[in-house]
Length: 275
Image (cartoon, rainbow, N blue to C red; front, side, top):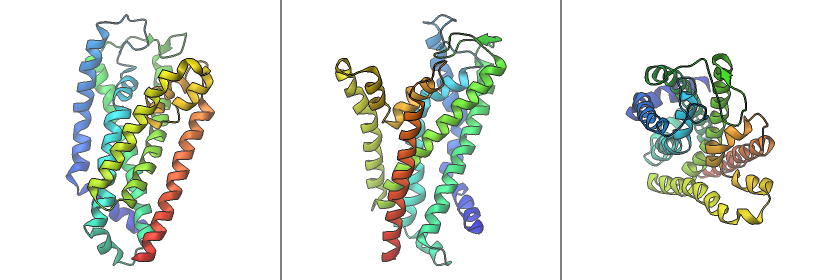
């Protein structure tokens, strides 16, 4: 299995899209910094959404996490699973005595490792660009906290935010992996993946129209059944001075991971019986 993991890791880096993904990190961060600089012009420095060098890693990630990142995962997983399977590349690997299940597990592990490396790179480069593009005071406010954070506290906060964000992407990847395994073409995989992401954006928005007839707790629970909404607002709520929906959000993420991971396993077993 170790040899298969190494082989899949090497195969991944033979794709131009893998290198392009990392080359785009500074571009994405520069675009985010430009947007946040304009936003600063309409804000006062005592607001948590006012961007400084220290909170730029979180604010730049929050701007991109539930849009650009999810789209990137969709394309990436479709390429390494659906396209390779339908083009016959996976069958060539299976000739080397590896089962379909082992190959898919290896691909999933490699994708999550690639994802982790991407987060680390994004985090480090966001600090570099943040210090080049923004002021760097010794303290500032963060969302849902009444006291200011110093540089050390902010670093711990930023690291925790990225850990939560990474967990949300694991949940998204589990869904997209299932879609890629069951899809007969890359077009179908992308189409279903886009539909899933759009639905995840849409129904929480529609839910706002019924908010007046719900309690705050019920509305929050329904709103945070959407992983992109957890990415957008749920992480900051969980990390507030008075945390909310922590157990609920972890439960939702756990459900997505276990449920779609289980469905993927069943789909793999069925495919193996026909190979």
